[in-house]
Length: 395
Image (cartoon, rainbow, N blue to C red; front, side):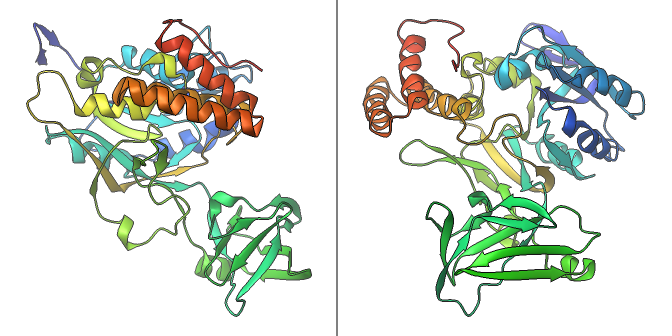
């Protein structure tokens, strides 16, 4: 029992894990299969699953899975899609743990994932949040480009007999040429390993020539690499949010803890009472930049003489599909990223910079004929000056 302000707060669990879901049934076997293996010998935890009015039967399916879980699962069905921000707020209000963990539904956690987060923050009152190491969901085979000073590789190829298109987020130092990528001997091009226990076969076209890659399971295990999706988050000089280390091969420099500017909401721990005091997520963000906005408020908590810090914890490891609920640079993604970037600047930097960025981004959208970028800019005006609520994405 702990005194908070003028009331006594009674905690039933040490940790509450909140998972927000929208049509993510396909992820639940991997996610809850991994949660079932989580080590927690000296602390207790619950899982709160907030379903954002899914149409794929996610909540009913989880109800069946939950019966076999060695921890309590509280399924909350929302009548509306509250987004990541509103969904997590709803879950946090139902939480009974002293600490609050946010976890994306398109993830798979390592057995020590939760313990490492909990032990890192538990006795450190100067720490506001702790961010996990997020790896892309699959391991990869890095193409051997040695001996080639430069060249072009077609985006479309055959991977284990299936059509596949090379994704730029798994590559480094490449240039998009439409139907192909140009590369040099310093480029990194990686292909996902969907099943480590079977042969890896790829048929690709490099410099106009068809090339074959064939690896046995033993060779796959020897050559596979893990790629960083997020080793903490940051904001650049243009106030764009970014994932530290994204697309880089996991290596020694990401095996040490360090202080970060802002946390990634895909896997993060904080004190539940401090989440409340900070005002929780701003539900107007719906999705994207909401974790950045929260991070800034969590660091500057009212009544604290000194700002708190946010840490990256390399021993808390999560596999993450990334943009599992919205495709990267889809209309939904584009609208929310640009709208919410402007909201973040207005709230946390300055009104004058907001107006400057608004003009820049709107002109860019107009030049690019990008309706969703322009729409996001205009809707940010409705939110910050007209104080309109429920301003949302429109197809």
